[in-house]
Length: 75
Image (tube, rainbow, N blue to C red):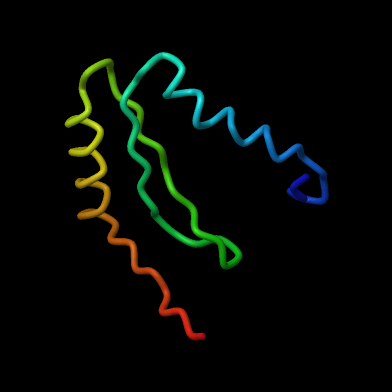
């Protein structure tokens, strides 16, 4: 279970987002864009069938317009 906004959600519900692109065999690319409450947040770009390069090109544009800077981790 995951606690999201004071509500328990089944962890397996997160598989929906991966299945959204993979079930119909569509190309998908995930891009980190920011942090919210210390956690990374990203977007998933889903493209038309056999247009893998398109999702990668969109991801490249997002990275150029909004560079993601990961914090330095200290151990």
